[in-house]
Length: 389
View (cartoon, rainbow, N blue to C red):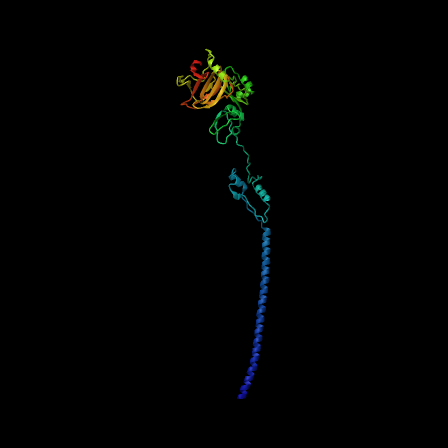
C-alpha cells in the first residue's frame, strides 16, 4: 500500500511537470498567434487608409481642376445707376485686399491715392477740388469806418484796397496824424480824391487839375453823356492826386506893431458881401449879446461853403465848438464854421468862395444838427447877417 502510494506520487509529479510544460507551450503559441493576427490587421488597416486617402485626394484634385471658382463683386454699374451723384456713401464698395507683406509708407499712400482716382468703368470718382479765393464785393459808395484798437492808416488802407493817401486826403490827415479807437474815417470806394464842384468848373478842367482821366471820372460817378455838373456836387476822382499847396507865411509881430495895428484898424469896405455858408435859410438862433453868431439848421451832412476866398487857418476840435474850421480871408477878417461832422480841407489850404469845406453836424455843445457861423474882424465877433447875403 505504501509502495503503491509512492508510485502514484511519483507518476503524479512526473505528469504534472509535463502538463505544466504543455500548458506553457499552448499559452505561448496562442499569444504568438494573437499578436500575428493583430499585426496583420493593423497593416491591412494602414494600407486601406492609404488607399482611401489617395482616392479621396485624387478625386478632390479632379474636382478642383474641373470646377471654376467664381469671386463675386458688387455690381458697379448697378450701384452707379442707383446713386449717380453721390460719392463714398457706401464705403463697403471699397475692397481692401490683405497683403502678407506691408509696403513702405510712400507705397501705402500711393495705393490709397489710386483707390480714389478716376476709373474708366466709373466705380469711384475723385472730385476736383478747386482752390478758391475770397473775393470782396466791389464798393461803389463812400463808407465810414470806426477805428479799432491796433488799426493804423496803412492797415485800414490795405483792408479797403485803397492807397494811404486816399484816406489821408479824404480825412484831412497828414503822415504824422494819429488815429485813435472810436475815430471815424471816411473811406472812398477806390483810390483817388474827392472834388467839390465850384461855379464855372468843367470836367476837363477838373481832370487836368488832378492829373486824372476824364472818362474814368464819368464812369466812377455814373455821369451821363452830357455830364452836367452842379455847384457843390461831390465827385470822386479815380487816381487823382492832391495839388501841392504852399503854406502861408506867418508874419512875426513885435509888441509895437501889434499896438500900431490895433490903433489903426482898417475900415471895413461896405458892399464886400460874402455868400451864404450852407444850404437852407432856417435860422434857429440869431446874433445877440450872449450869442455872437448865427445858427443855421439843416440835416447832418449838408455841405458847408467858404463864404469868401482865403486860407484855412484851423481845422480840428475845440471845446464847445466841436469840429470847426477857421478861414483867414485877409484884412483881419476871419470866419468860423462850427459843429461840423466832416472836413474837406486842411490847415494851410487855399479855398475859393463857394468851395465846400465840410459837412454840417452836431458835434460839441449842440442840441441838434446846425451850423454855428461867426464873422470875426480884428478879433471881435460881428453880426454875420451884416456881411452875408
